Amino acid sequence: MRRKRATSQDVANLAGVSRTTVSLVLNNVKRASIPPQTRQKVYDAAETLNYVPNATAQALATQRTKAIGLIMTRSPHHISSDTFLPQIIGGLLEITKKENFRLLIELVEEGHQERVYLELARAKHIDAMILLTPRLDDKGIKKLEDVGIPTVLMGKLEDLELYAVGVDNRNAAKKATQHLIDLGHTKIACIGNARPSYGAARDRVLGYKDALLEAGFTPDDSLIRYADFDPQSGYEAMQSLLDSKQEITAVFVASDNVAMGAKSALREADLRIPEDISLVGFDDIPWASYSDPPLTTVRLPAHELASEACLLLLDLLKGVEVKERSLILDTELIVRQSCKAI
Image (cartoon, rainbow, N blue to C red; front, side):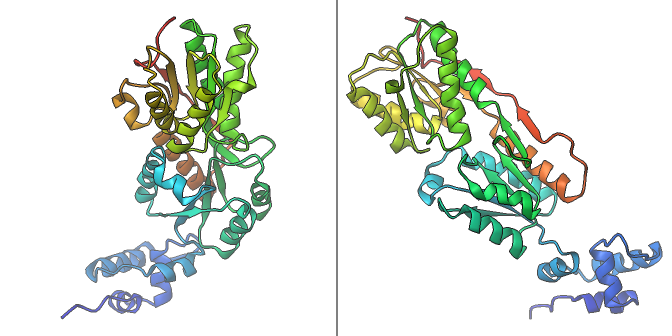
């Protein structure tokens, strides 16, 4: 027979205290004036009975769900093909597990962000939220400042008071493009990782233009295409560039995931990397160093980004004073064999 699960009343009976005292002790309610000896009796009784607090009751007692929401304005298709996302989730889970929090993932359809954000905040399903790859045109983010739920953006947006953890996408993209310029390339195309309504995507294309301008070249918008996070969109963007019949010796692709599709389009056109065309990516996802040839790319510290965002969010929940609103982590250009000098 299966043993009956111990209840808080069982703990109270064994410790010789009330159920209220058990709740106050095990939920670590700071304002409760309970003698250390009584607290120890409750801890000993709970351990003896192998008592595990009911999560729902615990949430009612503490007004906390012990859950953090990871909110993404992406389609299920994007999620299934994104090789960058597992690193983000891994970084978040590493911290939430240590702190006994749950991680809830919510996909938000484009145009419904404001409603979903406010519903999550007001319904108290989560204690705090992390917004991944925030959009410049997302009106719902501004409303979160008024609601008051602790929120951290993974990616910086201007004119917002919310806390943010990210990288300098613009400067990193500039360095990647500068690497191609240093190798003698002047006909350099660009494939953005997403539409410019995403802050990071916009900044990576701006960084590409910055490098050209600094080198004395005029950016040509006809050499710029915008992908949609996944390899298929990278394939189509590269095909579009090739179909334009413009002279191109190198391409900066603002996402390794998108670059997978771009490489496929180049192979179909019988163009070799780097003999016929040089390629630089962004993110340094796991496959980048094992591709043929190994991809030169910008290393973005995905796991660390997620961990820092989660730690910052937990500090906000604990009432820790956080003076810096924005934390910018370093990136690094990783040079491999996908580019050659001309």
